[in-house]
Amino acid sequence: MVRRRTRWEIRQAAALLRRRGGHAAWAPIVDAARLARTSTSLHVAEHPLPRGVRALLAPLGAQGRAALVVNARLPLPERNFSIAHELGHWVLHSDALGRPAPRGQRRRQEWEADRFALDLLLPAELLRSVQAERNARFSDLARRLGVRPRLLRRRLAELRNAAPRASL
Image (tube, rainbow, N blue to C red; front, top):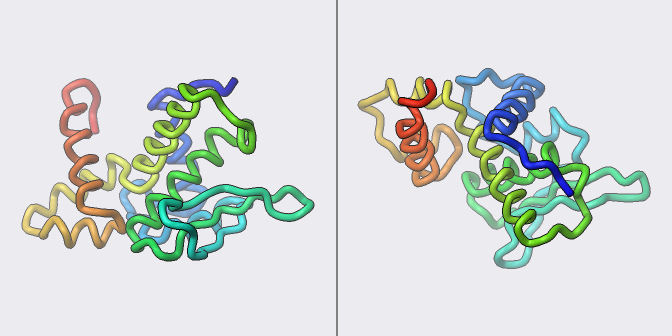
């Protein structure tokens, strides 16, 4: 059984991977594949995958080195999030990769990987600097950050709602 991670643990794991990749908390990651290649031992490949498959982690070769394969048909913002999500699995659930998990545990792992992706691509420090750009068009900000506009909206709303309890 895989241990449940807290939001704080997930945020710290994402921040560590950012630092390992040389990204400051206020700097956007516009190419998650590059981050994965430079800061992990994963082999990263982009290939056309079947419809509905965004990305996956798979063993590669006899050495057991893992590969992160992302669907090359996806637009860049979707690829970035999918790669960040799979990096979340690799960082948080590497002890359970390749083993089937019960449905409830699998759902929790997917939630944790999504949280990791959000914290990796859109940490609070980065969003603070983006909020200061009041005259910029929302779609332009999202493009510059390498994410979909709805993901940026969701993350900004989430951080606004959490602000009274904890600082952004």
